[in-house]
Image (cartoon, rainbow, N blue to C red):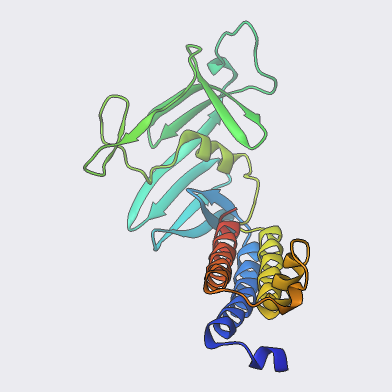
Length: 254
């Protein structure tokens, strides 16, 4: 305790901040990791059962949003008062494209939005990804870009609704998405470890300074740190504290 009392207000402030961040982010990480669900647009949609359907609820840009997946393989999406779908997936072996080498597990399907046919062909799953190939054999790739006015457009220059679910998302929901969560305890522990190193360098700054000098000069224990040395210490403590905060935040997005 005497060692802490001898610290100046800035050093004490960093120690308090490091401790506060460890405690606050421990609570945040626990809440984030406990929220398991369907990952859509980097947001977690938690599942629940309602009237025989599976509902995945979450928020996008602060707006409540939810996917409703019915037993008949139909999917609807609601966000900000707007409804997308319902999208209906129907398995149809005749929709499979004729390929020289057919991917393992490829399934023929038709996907409709209401009465409109939006896809006919085959899909297969590779890991957590769904790949689609049209009936004519072409891959179902869509290229989007954002113009200077902030509007997202497709390869033909047509405006695209960024909230509209992709066909691969529809298939993931129909065939059972792999549930996940945001955040990893490894990042929290890593940040805490760096916090402890930073705290140790604050509490034992002079001892570390003399120990380092002992490899270079004699009577190192009598050396007095210069103003340049003191400035380096404070800059280092500040930089490490910022790095700890960055690790906490990045770890929550993992």
